[in-house]
Length: 352
Image 1 (cartoon, one colour):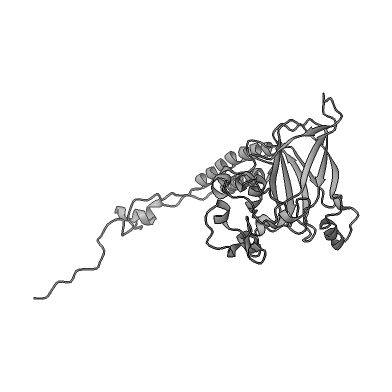
Image 2: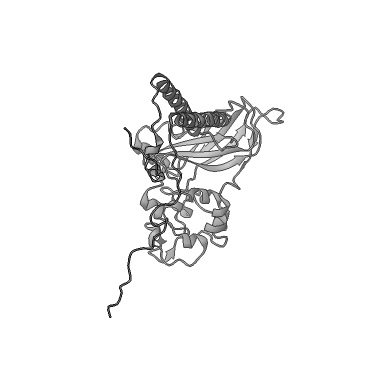
């Protein structure tokens, strides 16, 4: 007796045959014009509010890399100057507060033409070592791994930590209202500037610098590398290092250096003493000091507001254009009974 073969044909269901009910909107001219108009009406106020919030942020941006090295004109002279520990690298710049800056006032340093997103640079770290876990290998830290012929391991290893930004700033308010002295020092708080997730999860409280190359330099800064690290300070407490280790995606970036917890009044003069030791001259980079307030949406950024306004105005213009075209040359809506999903309704579409 012949054995009946099981059919491999899938069981008939509306799901397998793609016959489930679905939304099949009919985009009539009215619906299209209404949709564009609604999008425009929603986006334009959002754009205006976003721009107003951005414009409420007060910023002071001052580039100082060329100003603090005026006597060196060529690239070679600038590199020689910045790498000479016997020279005085301090300079004083003056800033004027354009509008009242309510506390907290954030202090940033801005670097241009610095490619922290370079593949070799981004990989040059060991997260196990930074957390305090047993590192399985230090090959990722190349070329800053060990010293003394490989006998001692650098902690923290890698190019990112080694190139830590090391310019420092001290601020003096020259004409503070009601001040007893002619010059009042401004205190900058360098705590609370890093992400809590980084401090708690990525950097160990029991990990302290060891054999760090920059620590061997006179004066606490490296002739080629960046800042020194305090030997008795754990990595989770060094927030400037934590901020620096979160690499930037673009070659022009800002990083938070500290916070000023006092109001700065309009037209006040701030004298900034800068220790200009970070070498951006080798790669033709620039350095800027930024003082900024914030709004409910963060720092100054006009892009989002302009984008909302552009899309909103474009949608309104398209809605008006479609309305005028439809008003001048109206087209009657076709017979929807000829649509594919209406053909099963049993309607006779034959015409005489």
